[in-house]
Structures are given as structure tokens and as C-alpha cells.
Image 1 (cartoon, rainbow over the protein chains, first blue to last red):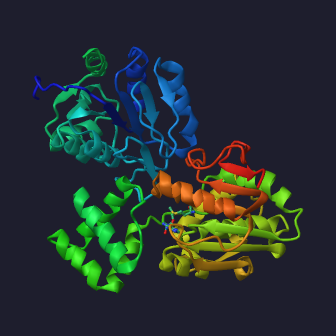
Image 2 (image 1 turned 135 degrees about the horizontal axis):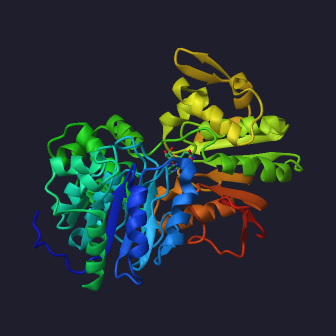
Length: 195
Length: 270
Ligand SMILES: C[S@@+](CC[C@H](N)C(=O)[O-])C[C@H]1O[C@@H](n2cnc3c(N)ncnc32)[C@H](O)[C@@H]1O
């Protein structure tokens, strides 16, 4: 861990998760103070039938406004965006979001790797990727891409995760900049917002 | 991942050599697709790949087929089909003929879904379904009406969620891992190649479906295509897009009224 690695002018915080990540999100997002100087993008695996509930729940609990993700919506600081189920979420150079129905990656659509890699291409050193609980290997390659482009990678401490496999896999195959417990992730996000 | 400049070179070459213009496709997705093809084929250098594309028309065709995203389903988003069945078809049913256009129909699952609903609502005999795509090989599959059997359970569930009440297995014959859909469903279908980037309107329709196609286009091309649909739609006709697509960046909102909660708009004036 390079504890001293710093990010300047963070534009996007992208958070990926799978099984067990909803609880983690609900321990983080409601406590982030409005306004935020970056956008938060959430990419989690879920069943189609949960479509509305995740948006509604996060919108209800968090002080930051949730913007509905439709194709080519502008990505703006100060809002939360949640990847819709059954589409991959991609980032365009003109700061809009695109959707894509191509094949599942890591058995998943949206795939965390796909969104992380795409965000890394556009936001480079102004990007922070956070990988939460899950029981699948999605996200590891994405974190590597974020780091390679100059951004920062954060992995939830597997000991604090409901499903440690996903964060463990990332720790095993990459060298994350930070491995943090849930409360520390919250502090980390608050810290970036102060900068 | 390939470099941006490599992608732009490919786009230029394809335009120059074959006249096909990918220039207005969404870059994020296109770049992933091209990178995938490039990696799959095991080329060492991008210029080897480029020269293969330039000199081998057969290879070029295969590449296009690989780059376009053809993933589709029957009764994809059941609540959308339920709204079509309950709210749109009854309105169309009052007309002597019903003309429907599936733009970007891929392998045809959407078209067969529509035919099943029309049949059940007693409207198929007076309907005609034009189904177009840019990709010739998906159209061949669509014509055959043969889909993988392993998907059928999901499709039967979707069908039920979309308001279907018949025995879904009456609509196909299962054989060697495939389901062949009945010919009485495809009698009213016309398949042909049509390119939304460059081709024009070819008829007037009462319902146009273009689902999960515009997401691959940038704003300008989306505008062009939505206006092409506008030119091809009768007054009081319907335009249906994918669940995450919108016409709001593309056309004046005074001309179209969103219908129900789904991505269905009704053309209210010429
Ligand atoms: C993801 S599929 C959508 C299939 C179906 N409508 C659905 O929603 O399930 C997208 C289709 O758009 C077609 N397409 C891409 N570019 C096109 C173009 N320029 N003109 C016509 N069709 C195009 C592709 O070949 C592909 O079959």
C-alpha cells in the first residue's frame, strides 16, 4: 500500500460490488455530505427484478441526488449515478454515459471491469475505483486499468466484507493503493471531498 | 485496448474502401468491440489487421458482423410488451392494415415476439412486419426462425410476464437443441438489409420499434435516425425504443407524447 498516494482534482468515484455490497453501500452513501465535488458512479450486480429498488433505496437514504441513467446522459459532479441492470455502462470522452447490451463479462452485465476500464480511459488520474464485497472475480482487471491510467484503487478489507472473494481476488492479483474497512472508505470519500 | 488513433484509422479506411461510415458510432463501445476482434484474431500489429480489412472483403464482412452487438431476447423487458399488448395493439387494431417496422431486429427474436402477440390479439392476418438490420448474417437467422433451445425457458417466462396465456411450446418445434418457430408466425414478415446511417425511409408505418440500437450511436446520428423514423411514421403512430433510450435529445417534444410509463411515444402531429 502506498499510503501517501494522493489524488488531486478527483472527478469520479466509481464503486463496484456484488453480493453483500448493498449493505456496505448503505453504510457509506447516506453519510457523505452534500454537495460533493465529483460524481459517484455505482456498478453492482443484481437481478433484473431488483431494478427500481436499489435506486429508490439509495435515493431515499442519501443526501446526494441520484440521477437516472439513460443512454447519453451527461455525467455531472454532485450526483450519484447507478448502472441499470442488463446493460454495460461506458464512459464517453465528451463526459456522457453510454449503455451497451453486449455479452456478459465475468457472468455479469453490468460488468465492473467494463465500467472501470472505460472510466479509466476517460478520467485517468482523476478517478478513484472502489471494489466492495462480492463472490465473483469481476472488478480486478478494472482496478488494474484504473491504476495503470494513474487513478487510485481502493479495496474493501475482505475481513469486513460479507462476501470476501471479490476483494480478496483483487488483493491477490493487484497491489491496491488502499485496503480499507467500511468506515475507513467513508472517511476516505469525505477526505477527497474536502480537498 | 487499441489506441484511439488506431480506431480512427480503421474508421477512415472502412469508409474509404467500403463506404460504410462508423464515424458516428459511440466510441466507448466501438473501441471495445474492435479491440476484441483484434485480440481474438491474434494479429501482432494493428497495421496487419488494417491491411487485412482493406484487402479482404470477406474478412471485412466478418469483422462488421463481429463488431455489431447482436444480443437479443424474446419478450425482452416483459412490462414493455405487456404495455404494447394492452394499450398499443388495441389502438392499432382499429385500422384496416397494421404496418410495423423493426429497425435493428438482429436475429429476429423481437419480431417473433410481436407476431405471437398480434396472433393472440387476432391482428396478425392484417399486419405486415418489416424487419431490417445492417448485418446480413443475423437476418438469415431471423428468416429461419430457429433459436437455441436453451433460451426457451427464459423466453417462456418472459412471455408469461408479458401477458401471454397460451402454452408457449405450441409456437415452436424442438429439435436437436433448437426451437423452430411456426411458419404461420413468419408469413407476414419481410426481412431486408437497411442501414440506419445512410439509407432513407421506405414506407409509412403505424409502429416502429428500434430497441437497443440507438445506444451504439452518438447524439448526431441518434438525431438523424429519430428524424428518419419521424418521416416514416403515420400521425398517431407509435415509436418504441429500449428501456434506457430516449428521444428527448433528438426531436421536438411537442410532436411526440410519451405513452404510459414505457419508452413508447405517440406522434401527435405532422
Ligand atoms: C443489440 S441489437 C438489438 C436487437 C433487438 N432490437 C433488441 O432490442 O433485442 C442491435 C442491432 O442493431 C444493428 N445495427 C447496428 N448498426 C446498425 C445500422 N447502422 N443500421 C441498422 N442496424 C444496425 C446490429 O446489427 C444489431 O443487430
